[in-house]
Image (cartoon, rainbow, N blue to C red; front, side, top):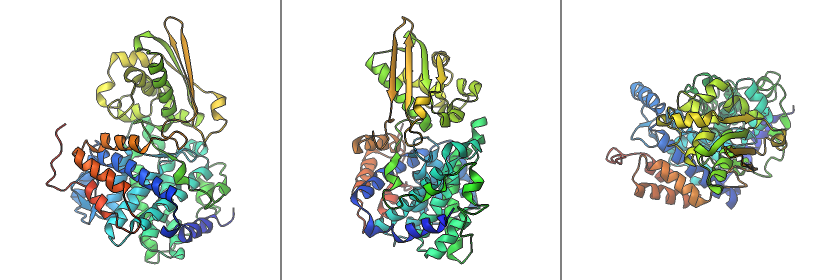
Length: 469
């Protein structure tokens, strides 16, 4: 493993600068930013966000950085923690499939807080820092090989995310290449995130991107003061790649650097659940609409799930067939399949407490059969396909293969669909006029201006009353 750490740092330090960004990657950054803001604003209302807000209130940690969707301001580190946690709570944030990682929730949380703490930062610098963070986090996730990383019980969004956050923070704080190298080295001792939340539907997964963003800022600030970190943290004998995967592919971290940006290969979620459930949900909703299938006609539903997603959404079976809380439902393929067929939708309203006890839904879940299919694995992790089949009581069978789930770069949400997703989320906190201002503000961002006006729009001044729901 040759100097992977140095190669990545040198690249993001020297090549990813505002004057070198093309129109395509700038437009995509705005698109993913709007997606992030919607989930962060709505996520500020989640049950799991409130303890974070209370903790900050008791810590009396004051600062100039907004907790999005609220009137609270705090330090950059704590704003990144709160926003990262809120934005991951709905399971609606972006996914880089080849790395099986949610980069935006970590990287935007880091970059928004630091650009708000320093109004001198231009939109161009903000975007360059975001693109750098995506590049590092996703490449490390690919190099670990997602399936192998999951097998060790880790969540790549936090383990790889902290390195991306450190790089974004280092760029926004104006660190030298040598300091950035130390920041990445320091971040290596902060790479954590356990999958044990799956055992009982705990909230810790939601905390992972918040912690990664907070720690990335901390690593960069320590490095700025001269604290030294190991310069071989990625490739060293006890480094990240060999410690966090049984069979890493280190060259994936630096292959084709600068040829194409991983941010352009990042997907947006239309459904409020684990990305491994989304291609099957696409297929089931399409079949239900095409053939006008009603739940009471259904005898059996067969869903083929990718192997890497199996331990997340298919096992243990007793838990997946009887979800007890929202986290369980967000990671239950039987629940996702049943609710999609019942309501032909799988948004926030479908993953809510009121649904679990419906006898009709439970009955439909019991008809869901989960299988593996070797054909689905052929282009994984670049492609996350699914195959679904519905058998009716009268013997009719309908089958569908989904190659690219809705939201993939190959099957994207249009700007209009993304804006509708944003409004459906942000309007839980803000009036529609404010939502429209944020959408327009993001679309019209100019590289030379400051992004701070948008952060102000996305936070709630005390005078703005919540809309009646």
